[in-house]
Length: 169
Image (cartoon, rainbow, N blue to C red):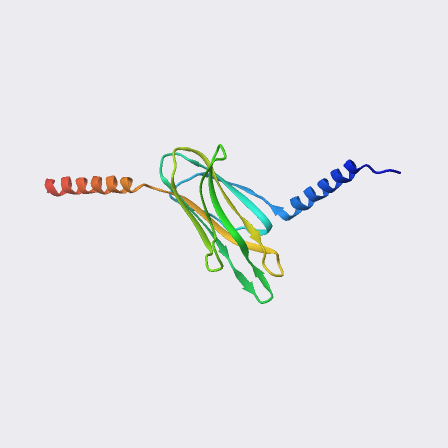
């Protein structure tokens, strides 16, 4: 029986694809429409991972997000993430902003961006490599933060109401 080189190459490619699929972890979470109340999620991840957080912006607020790797050591077992990244994309897959952990003492990544109404998503990624577990834990949090102009107008309105009430007395 003669085996063709193309058959061997296809089999090795298939095997490599299976191994990559087994070691990669990807989950998509639906955040919904962002509001001032923060959305928070703390997943446990394994191996190479890229989690996606889809969300909608209804008005034009600043959007703030943070991802923090939780380095947990329980004797010979630990949870750790190397190369933690946080990226913000438009619905057309255009990278808008990103941040990466830069060293062992840097455990968080942060983004703050003003966005137009529409659909967007964050990705959180890295390599979970805790000893004895090959796992990591991170906390992702995001919220819509009203612009400074919004607070200024609210304070001006409250001041005006206070002035009118005081004058009527």
